[in-house]
Image (cartoon, rainbow, N blue to C red; front, side, top):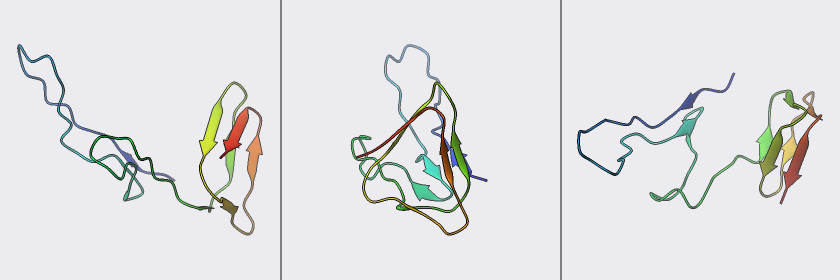
Amino acid sequence: MTKIVVNTIRSQTGVTSVTFHDTITANGKKQWLDRFGIIKANSTEIDENVTIPSGTNGLSVGTIRVGAGYSVTVQGNWRVI
């Protein structure tokens, strides 16, 4: 199971911007490499069975390997660039 930790937003009265205090991670790995969220990171190996449901778009970047005994079922769209 993937564990995703999202940013904590601390509300402030009269403030028009938001400051994120926590790094977004999935299974302990940072999801963005820079502090502005421009460079997204992804792993290169899929070690679980994954289904991309109909009506859903999936995107991966770089060489992606599906581990032995696992599969990716694409009912929607998956682009690897």
